[in-house]
Length: 375
Image: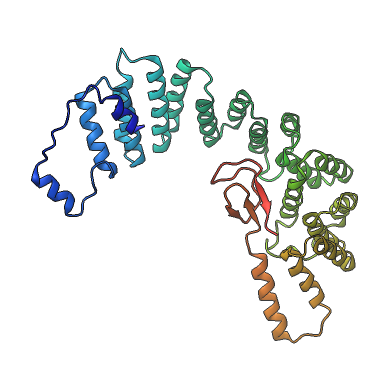
């Protein structure tokens, strides 16, 4: 943008003289960055251009962006305000400046002012997708999830709209963990039937109320609508809810009532073979105190994918219980098992970010439903 601004001014600027003061040349040779390669130098040059050619709107926009990039939000905001205060400024430039002003305010932490700037820009540009995206993010950051969902409806992004409907449902519930009212969750599923997040909250609700028949029905429906590569998210989310009172790294220990485990196992037994779902089925079998069934599921998992290391770790852990091993050796094995279970098991397929817990929106690259299980 800076280069385009400078080029657009080429016909209006006086030619620079070839001679430079010797002192300036010497100072650069003494280790200072060459002109235009240093951000501060670019800011100084653009400030001079803005002063000499105040009609060059692109220069002001570029200068404000540089100040923001440097973290100098006060100067960036001052530049935008100076520009938007011009009575003769063309509408498209006024809208652009207001949009950039909103970004400045948001980066500076003034969310209310950022919203006002975005609204004024919207009055000039209408429902521009880039602007609506920023307004949706701002609403979400302010906890206004319903508003964020409305913006994504305008953007025709049902996945994101469904996500924020779920967030609104969780924000409105009296409990911090269980959504008691399914109205918004059902709306989220109607909006995007493949919403793993909405289905997970419904299953958690069923489980919390002991509604096993509803849980069985909802789980079957969820498996039909969700992308097969995301079905493990339901099981991981349910497990984390069910073992929330335990150490999160020790999930392979019976501690549940048998009803939810049996409901999920019955549904998984009717699915096409899948290594990740087989791995979770082994854990569920342990909740029924059925070690042989758990071993069967783990062997099935490794038959489908011999490199599935989490299943291999648990298989060794179960088999070691029946071996006559010294106490010292068992202690060493326990350390190894604990270490393996602490590894981050989820990553973003888009950017490679690894996480310890499931996610629906990558915090780094902002990709939706890009989670994968590290096998």
